[in-house]
Image (tube, rainbow, N blue to C red; front, side, top):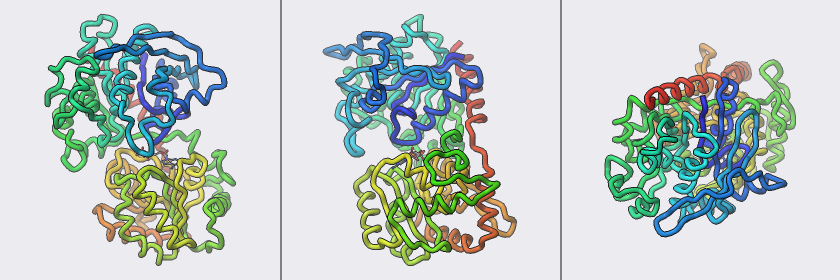
Length: 485
Ligand code: ADP
């Protein structure tokens, strides 16, 4: 099949979170299954910088009309990587900026225009380059593609055969804008209703995608159920429940070419289930990178790599920082985003310089070092659509401590020391006490060397590669294409 991905992030070009990992890895896996894949991305400043020579111009100018003006957009050839063809939508006025979405976790004021234009430009570009059988669109930034196709372009014979699949990577980010966005983006006012794109008197990109896509997916089975409830649906639960039979949960996979302690180029040493020796060198290297010296071998290291956002559960960590610091444990954290949580970690590290260390930035190499060098990995998320870091941790024998939600619940099985089964520590209630009790359980288990080794090997034996999820996506594309036919 011919499948076109449209998204705002994709490794190795532009990444702020898990979305980029998925849009980077899944197309390559689909190519292996014999499909023809293209990926459309906005041409951000950080992508431009990756090219010594400007990428070749494929289409010099597409006209993208708005209510009182037009913009003229180029389409660039991003090249073929592992069989996947990349296209960049070039509109320097909107995309040639330092950040993807806005300064320090905020939003650019013209994001409706930026991603509205991106969606329309992908459709227009495809009419010249080749209309795919499937548009697979990701998150709110690409969610207007189905809305345009079923409204603005409904009578276009070139596009009538194209089916659409929307993947929701996080239902909390919806892209909501003032009502006038409807006419700014040249939609008829008829679509600004509760049944279509309107939500609490806002124009809601994600809702539009949910309503107008042929099929919907999200990134774990559990999260597909959760988002149909008021606790997780972020006010879209009604519309999502209405489409329940078209909504599937497909767990994200891991790109083991990037995340494997036996081959990872970012590490001080390599290791594998057959020979775990290298992990000690990785641990020493990690502690050194965080300026923590003289940590006893018997003291476990808890690692954190995260967007510092409320979703990730750091409000309950905040309530027990003192208690954690009294335990025989060391915490290393890497993250950025919300200044509130950045300060929380800074203060924690300031108060306990021998036990807690934090680096406030985005750093791919350090993220790999933490996965390899830590003994445990903490993800106490309030909600977690899929979560990738716990799956990376499994491969690195770094035992996850997680809250039982979304993909964390789907991927981590509670450790049972009597039977020697399980892959981590998992608590259900969203409370500081539950979290602390689970951390204590993990610290106790760490003292039993033989049991801990069994647990590490259980973790490392898990296989969350993309092979199976990719096949599930293909079945879904076939279903979407049949419906459209
Ligand atoms: P989310 O997409 O909600 O942020 P995921 O667990 O799905 O969470 O994916 C997060 C991805 O981003 C992982 O690949 C993780 O390693 C990476 N990541 C998050 N924060 C940082 C950071 N500060 N430095 C490097 N990588 C990070």
